[in-house]
Image 1 (cartoon, rainbow, N blue to C red):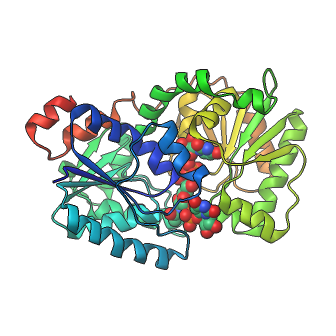
Image 2 (cartoon, rainbow, N blue to C red):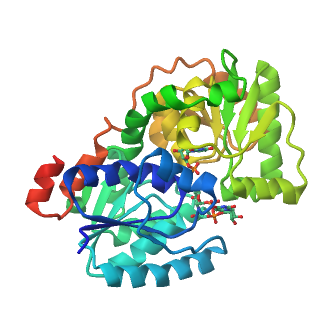
Length: 367
Ligand code: UD1
Ligand code: UDP
């Protein structure tokens, strides 16, 4: 019988659950990885298993891409079959994707206890699919691993009992601590892209509400173009497949100072993040990483579920308005990167294992 089953399906879940999987390996905790197959392109999936040295998933449910309802529905059916077969003590999900929603709903009705890693994030914007997913996951979970006291406070405000919540820090710090030096040694991305000793900005934009909306997407690209021209630098944009599809469907010509490339592996993205003068993004994980690495960040959204990053001065919201993107970027470039890291010390994975209802003996080894 498996002790812990991980249900994951997308790039950020693989990255942020890797430290917990590795803590299980160190502690001899038996585990099973159930991959929903929400992400399946090598650049969003297998590259992370390779670079983070994770064991291959035990199950791949190959759900693939479709509408929210169809994708989640197929996951529900397939996850239930696997959980019935393997009967884990604990199911862990991480974050706010449709894979998390499906894993949480199935596990909450199964015999297993359900743990939600990165619980209590709120954008207060219910038009975001991620906001719905994280609210549901939090409210059906038995163990809520809040990365910060701020996220804990959102959960308490929603009436979730305190005894279910543990403040652990974010496992993104564990991943960075482990991989920063490896990225520095192994990644050739800077040389490959001709960026050694060159000033550049790094950009990501993939979120549904930004790239599926033609005006917003064009505005974001125009704002980043103007920012790059104002500061005389090039912008490197590894393009997520959702955004790539929209660029083609809308017939967008991405302006010159923005160099589009394929999505990067984790080590290359980390290497570029550390070297960039500024990061412009709509990603959740990238906002956190920029903050932890001391790189100023502009978040091209109207809200953020990571207010810790703006509170410490590492990040500012610009919306998708081109003028505000330029102004915000120019302001952020004046920051010195010396803010505090609000996401913990890199021991989140151990804290998560210690809080779970595993055998006392197993928990002792995890310590
Ligand atoms: C999902 C998450 C989002 C997260 C992102 C991480 C939901 C609701 N959204 O968004 O919160 O930030 O993952 O990257 O769960 N595609 C490929 N190859 C793949 C996967 C997708 O080409 O391996 C393309 C397909 O055309 C697909 C589109 O990308 O239709 C969107 O994929 P999907 O998984 O639905 O959502 P993401 O935008 O990746
Ligand atoms: N990332 C990566 N390669 C890229 C872009 C991002 O490895 O080309 C990593 C990044 O380091 C971060 C994670 O992907 O850890 C963020 O995932 P994403 O932006 O897809 O999702 P979100 O965090 O917004 O849910």
